[in-house]
Each structure stands twice: as C-alpha cells, then as structure tokens.
Amino acid sequence: MNTKHFNYGLTFLSASLTALLLALILLCTSGVQAQTRRTAPAPKPAPSLLAGLPKSDAVALVNVRQLLDEAMPKILAGSPAKLAEVNTEIEKFKTKTGLNVRSFDQVALSMLYTYPAPDITKIDTVALARGTFDTAALVAAGAATAKGNYREEKYQGLTIYIFTLDQQLKLFGLFDMKVHDLAVSALSNNVLAIGSPSTVKRAIDTNKGRAANNAELINLATREANAVIGFGANVTPGLIAGVKVTNEENAKDLSTIRQVYGTVSVTEKDVALFLAARAESAESAKNLSVTLEGLKELGTFLVGRMPAPKGTLARAALNNVKITTQGNELQIRTAVAQLLLAPLLRG
Image 1 (cartoon, helix red, strand yellow):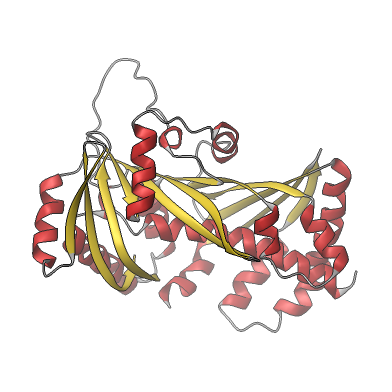
Image 2 (image 1 turned 135 degrees about the vertical axis):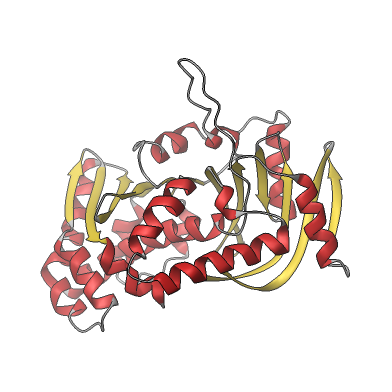
C-alpha cells in the first residue's frame, strides 16, 4: 500500500468528520426553550423536523437534549472548569439573542450548495429548532442590543427577528464562530427557523406550502434512531471539484461517490462514529475500500508523529476502524473512549 492511498483515506475521513462537526457548530448558533412534554395514552411520535426543511443538498438531525444533558457532561466529567465555561457561554448567547441553547429538544439542519466561483462551494444553512419559546424574549434582547444592531422584517405574514452580532462567539465554550446577521422566525408555536435572513425566508416559504423533496436524504439521516447526530448528503460534481486531489487514481475514486451519510452515537463510555459512502457501483465501493485500507497499514506510523492529545485520539480511532462494503456502499465504523475527547475540548 503506498502513501497516496493513505493520504486519500485521510482526506475522505477528515471531510466526513468535518461535515458532522459543522452540523454541530451551526446548531449551536441558535436556541429555543424546551417544549413541555404532555402525558397522553399511546402518544404518536412527533413528526420529524427534517420534513419541514426546504430543498436541501444535505440534512442533519441533532438530538440536542441528549447532547447537552448526557454526552457533554460525560465527556467533560473530569473538567469542571470547562463545564462551567460552557454554561457561561450559553448564558452569554441567551443574553444577546433571547435564545436559550439549553432549551433545545431537537434541531434539523438544511444545507444547500452554491458555487460562486469555479472549484468553490458555499453552503447556505438554516436550522429548525423544536421547543417552547418566548417571542417577547427575542424582542427584549433586540431592544437591549439596539443602536442599529437589531431589526424586524415581515415576510409571508411572519416576523423575522434579525440580530446584527458581527462578532466572534465562543459556542459551548468550545467553538469560535464569526456571526454577522442572525435571523430567527417562529414557524409555529413550537418551531423556530434560525439562520441568515435569506435562508430563514426559504424555510418560511416551505412552511407556507412550497413542498421540498428531501425524502431520500431524510431516510439516510434517520437510520439510527438513538444517534446523537445523523446526517445525509448528496455529493455533487461541484462539491468534488472543490476537493484538491492531485493523484489521478484517487480523484477517479472520489468521483464515483454519489451520497454520504453517517451518525455519531454515545454509549456509557465511548463515542461511536459511523460513516458510509454510496458509490456508483459495487465495484467502485470495493475500490474505495482498498484505498482506505491504507489507514490500517500506514496509519500507525504517521499518527505516531502527532502530539498528544490529538495523536492519542487518532491512534485510538485508527485502531478501532473497521472498513467494509455492502453492495455499492463503503462503510466505516470506529469508536473512541469519551475520556480521550475531553483534553481536546478543554483547549
């Protein structure tokens, strides 16, 4: 196995992990108070938020309550200072926008690719957040920012609250993100649309009856009912063009991928990652698996040069990697102990 195969394997795995992390970061830029659960005999499951998303190239579903109440406390159990910092940052965001991140129940994300220039892909994102919320809190937060940093717009009979934050926010005390105009609108009494002004308008259009057909992506994103995060995405020629792969053989392998999907799950001690790539044929999937086997053959040598804690985490993930194929799908599974993630989140 030569190094070009390993480098391609790292590129594919890194891109998939980045997609999951982006979904997590984007959901943290918004907030909504938790919906009060009502007891009723034989309740029907609530409709998935994903069904209300506008036309998308990628979708993700995040169980925020599980993430905040179960996963994060476990991962940061050995760092009470970081947990305190997380709580402080959540309160700061609530003060600026009137949105309480801790009141999330479930968040669905829609990502639409645009191509402003050759080999460049831009992703326009909007989130739907389910829970209870108080529009008066949004208005009050807007009034507090004042001085031209807050405005309201009417669109399709709904009010859009727009906060011009134009600053770096540290979300969850873990991620730095530059936020300019954050738009929020209530689509119903328990669902908010959150994003840029233009993406929130797209969500409103869908809510008003302009149906979107994301059925296949929704199916991919919801294959694991207990996942903390699930996502499904189309892989377009424009998206692939933005990935710089100099080796012709590797570029050919990459061009056979049509869709990717995956999940992040949390057990009592581990964080488990599942990633899958749907190729154009079973033969293409086999070729991809051969390429990615380089992770097992050369990975130990290369990650051995990485400093802790990243090197420790990478070695654990690599040791647990299982690469298989099922029909035209390439599937990757791995898991790492929660305690190995904590040093990275502590900064």
